[in-house]
Image 1 (cartoon, rainbow, N blue to C red):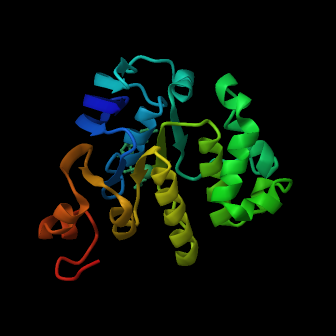
Image 2 (cartoon, rainbow, N blue to C red; image 1 turned 90 degrees about the vertical axis):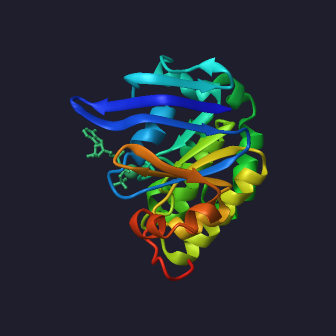
Length: 240
Ligand SMILES: Nc1ncnc2c1ncn2[C@@H]1O[C@H](COP(=O)(O)OP(=O)(O)OP(=O)(O)O)[C@@H](O)[C@H]1O
Ligand SMILES: [Mg+2]
């Protein structure tokens, strides 16, 4: 479904991604982990069309999207939940969600999509009229994910959705991600919460200093002591 071939992304003179090749199959849940500043957000934002790639190619469903204008990525079926959520805090929850369905095809399905989002996140149902900024951090993350789902994506990009949330909320959040994936939507998940993310992922990639240094089944990666220690932030001797 998504095929990255040796993509490079730079900020001025500083290269943040070096020849990254990665693929995501239709309906797959891929998790990308790695230390701070590894380039995880740069990768996810490039796939969302927010950063231009300076080398390499990106194909989505066979189409070359390498030079596509940023505003066209959503119409292709790619939706981003950015790091830090980026909600319009003074606007209502409903208005934030509806922003996700501004394109014509998604707008035609707006009420059905809203119903699906409320079924996935029941806590949002009675808060639709409230300003998004009045919600708890976990509920705001639900709004951010809901807004992306309103676009009816085939690929959902999640950049550190659990960041700063209480453990109980994180469990609910991962359960929601699992259900979104079970509905047939491909998910690329970037997470600091490595052990939780690897539990729901079908495949994982480790990014370090702008390069993919390992990919495989989560169990394979977890079995490699040096990966556990260096990149996954887990003690080599103890299971997660
Ligand atoms: N707008 C920018 N301008 C210049 N350099 C940037 C910019 N954004 C990121 N970088 C640099 O690119 C590299 C990768 O950053 P990126 O934010 O993609 O990492 P990350 O893996 O998402 O980190 P974190 O875990 O902190 O979110 C870092 O060295 C960072 O300093
Ligand atoms: Mg980041």
